Image 1 (cartoon, helix red, strand yellow):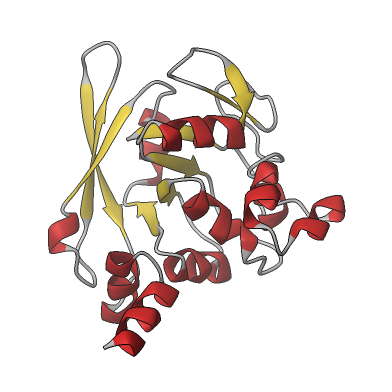
Image 2 (cartoon, helix red, strand yellow; image 1 turned 90 degrees about the vertical axis):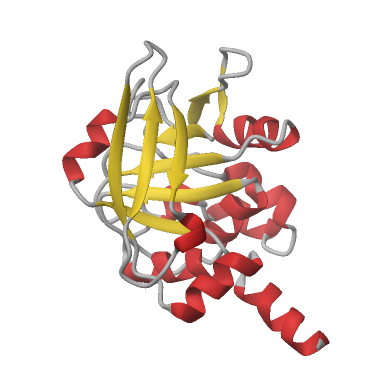
Length: 200
């Protein structure tokens, strides 16, 4: 997978999915996803709402990069700071990353409601076992999450980070998913699991 964005500092649900004029698109997930992470600060550039497209080398709005990766079948990860997703319990802040092809959000710590919303959407909300490992993530890294087949409550996962200079790091990650929430992840979302059970 690729790093979509490493967000620096405060990243509330309004940074992830802005309100204001965007709320008129609440019933249209594709349109409202154009606001994805528009308010987030890129840790590598200090610019807001822009990320490096590693397929082209250009900086674009975050949703444009995410859509390009998705079109090329490339999964992506967002890395964040402390209390990621604080603020209002805006569900679109969790729906948009899943819709745009995201696989995991890895942060120092989550706001509880946003973490739960990500679980419902089938996203992996993970935290650094050592928060200082946030600093090891570089813009052009290749990322792999190891241990997903054995995903279980309380069991750590490992992030393998391959840097462009040929070096690598292994970073331990924690999660708070229970058995039900792991089923949501395996089904792609809580709604998918309910639909599958109702079909049987």
